Length: 149
Ligand code: DQA
Image (cartoon, rainbow, N blue to C red):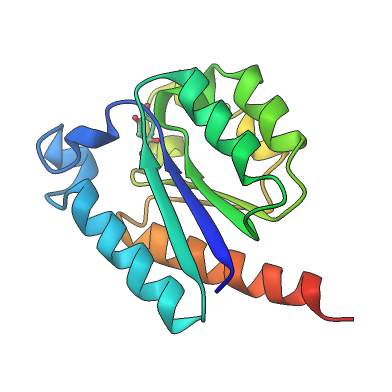
């Protein structure tokens, strides 16, 4: 089965405990279960990771080259700071969908800019953890389109 990589940046391990008024009550384990279920319904499997370390996210993107059909990424705070994650994604050949649980555009001005959006095929923000499900569906769709002659 083709694999979709789902990556989560810093502090997302605290989903469900951290600022629930912004990020909701669901946990990262709930996000993983949702992604697995959505991907399976589309005929894909997922590789799911979270890290608080920028280099680990970059290493996982590198490892995804030639081994996965697309990436769903919530870079969390690295969204707004990381040229290195953008560069890693630019070296990746498949579709990329950026997800944010909260609507970053409704929040502080420093969250309005994303380095990753310049590479992403789609950006989903403010749909709660449901956004990950939409992102998996979109990546599956784009991956299928890419494969078609
Ligand atoms: C976030 C939004 C970011 O601005 C923030 O730093 C996060 C989570 C989101 O999912 O809404 O950690 O990516």
